[in-house]
Amino acid sequence: MKRYKKNLFNVGALMQGMATTFGFMFKKKPTIQYPSVKKQHAPRFHGLHELRRYADGKERCIGCELCAIACPANAITVVGAENTPEDRKSPGERNAARYEIDELRCIFGGMCEEACPTDAIVLTPRFEMSDYRRGSFIYAKDRLLVPPEAGVGTAPDERPNGIPSDLGIVAEVKSTTDIATGYSATNRGEILKTETRGLAP
Amino acid sequence: MSGVLDTINAAPLWLIVLVKSILLLFVVITTFAYAMLFERKIMGWMQLRPGPNRVGPWGMLQPAADAVKMFFKEDLTPNTADPLIYKLAPFISLLTAFSVYAIIPFAEPKPGTLWAIGNVNAGILFVFALTALGVYGISLGGWASGSKYPLLGSVRSTAQMISYELAMTMSVIGVLIVAGTTSLAGIVHAQNRLWFFIPQIFGFLIYIITAVAETNRAPFDLVEADAELVAGFHTEYSGLRFGLFFIAEYVNMLTVSCIATLLFFGGWNAPFGLTFIPGLVWFLLKVGGFIFFYIWLRATLPRFRYDRLMAFGWKVLLPAATINLVLTAVVIAVWG
Image (cartoon, rainbow over all chains, first blue to last red; front, top):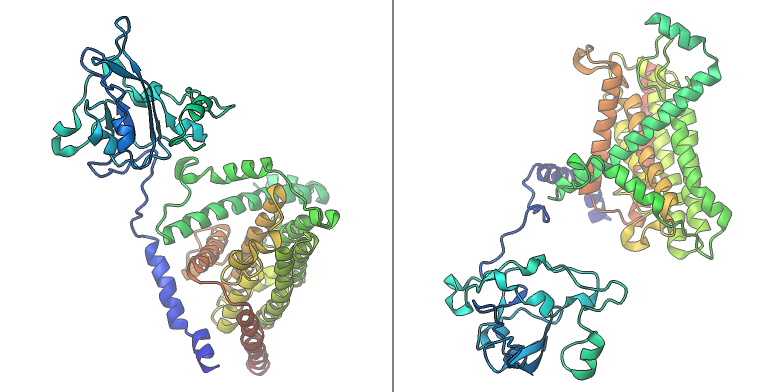
């Protein structure tokens, strides 16, 4: 009862509390006004992937699936195909007929980038990829592959201080999600039939 | 100017009252909207946030955005609710909250201009009668929701309102004794020389504390205690009906601020002889000061525990208010 009374009538503590909140009113606010002001993230930040090309416009990816094997999160699905003399997609014998990354599974570890023998898959600093459907986070070649006019970019090993760069073209590709079904442009039903790995709905 | 006044005063009384009422409703609702924005801003700053700032410059259109949102929300009625009372309760709250403004004088009444809808002799009694009725909206709404948290909230509100209303009324009677009148304008006139918060400092402190409890605001917001009762009496309400309760709460906050200004802070009287600023401005400034104080309290103090709330009301505030009343009466009887 004594302690209770002491607490109840502790006007000094009350005043101290009021003074604290009053003082806080004039302090600088740490809020970053996100869409209009963006936070500077760490220089070597790992973000969204992009698939790059050679200077002549051929795809670097040879469909070897090393990235898919290296991926600790099993987020990458590659289906290779033979290049034909009429349709040479990449300089070697094979190319990636399908190249898909589930960005929801991806842990942005950069293992794919390290594993890639042709520097085809690289991570960019881009991180804003919110969408309305889970299916929309499965990025296929239509959104990963940079267009031929984007240039070749810097290979991961030759980056200054290892800082990733962005060819900046993929950003303009809008989500290809069909809102009604929630599937991305690639037919996911087919993937699930042929591939059992890494594509939880 | 006096010609215009004469023309206006020549209009039938019902017309004058109607126009004044509509004008007053508009003013009170706008004040409510910006009091809410003000509260969110101040609370934000005190919590190191910028507060609402996306809608319009400085967030000035936030109330409009909120109103549109409220309008388009679905109006749910639980299966277990008592439909009639459930739907009526917000209107009871709102009606009692608004009707008080019929008699609050905003500035000095002069011949031909009465800065209120009515000048009631027993004004302060009218105010307390209406604010006491306000609890019906809350307790009926909570009861009619037919769900456990609203019921607990409404039970709490009934107990809390009764406990604190006693102390509140007691603290105000001291002012009435000093002023010698129950008319609000009369009480303000009695403060021409000395504002009553000086001779009635204890009464003022008790009034301020009980007023927070009466309006169910932090730290006495046990009626809607989010942590224990989800949202208390308005858990089941949504959309516009929830909005009505919300308006009622803020309008009640404005009311107690107005009453505090009228009874203890000299109403429209200017401090330090700064009479070149009109009385209306002083009145609004003082009310604004009280509202800031309530927001400040809410941003600072944690919620009371229920038993302590009751103990504080009955064992501290009520005896203190009674002693204050008796002492005031004795002083006035002997020296007045």
